[in-house]
Image: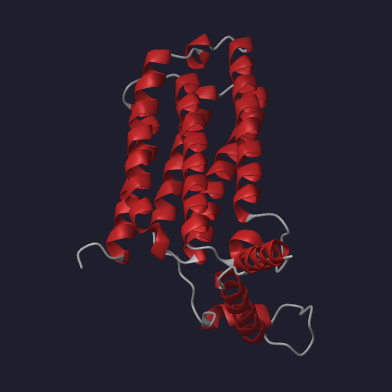
Length: 276
């Protein structure tokens, strides 16, 4: 079949790069101000998070798994809230923080007398956001056709990559505020910001490497360091961690049956009451 997992990964990688290129091209080639570029980045983050939430909700509806309702994270801690709720709360809180930082950084630029960087061209913002939205809608539409067949792991990784993009922007804005306050080199700052954001998008589009055993050179280096667990080699700890991760993923992938069981019990009680 033409549309397989490899084709899907290539397509999503291209979409991700295209979405990132929109504000980057505006900054480097269309002479967008820093304010205009940051507003488009902020919109991209909010829209991407909401569309990921749609994927999670549809997958939860069509293919309910334990991970949706009792998610076990990589730190082995279980959650009593739904995966969708946890993702939305975390991502939207970060996006709200981005909005505050965006307003503050534009205020700092105006205060430093760099009105050309702080001014927002709302027409350019509109064009940039529409282009970004079109790419994201196409990406969502392609996923919704096949989301029923996805594993929960794929949903989980999609959500974590989305949060990763949000965190990258957040951390860069924090560092950017410090740079503006201390040096006033705003133009250079935003150039670096755009480059880092683009490089991160490219890194996410690349295949993730998950070796079954650690590289030999890494084992040699780690085994020479002081060990928190005496008598345990680094490769043994690596193997155990891989085994624990496999069990975590298997637990999240199990079909969610509690809701069905409760519905059956509710139906039985209703039938008994009718008979009485």
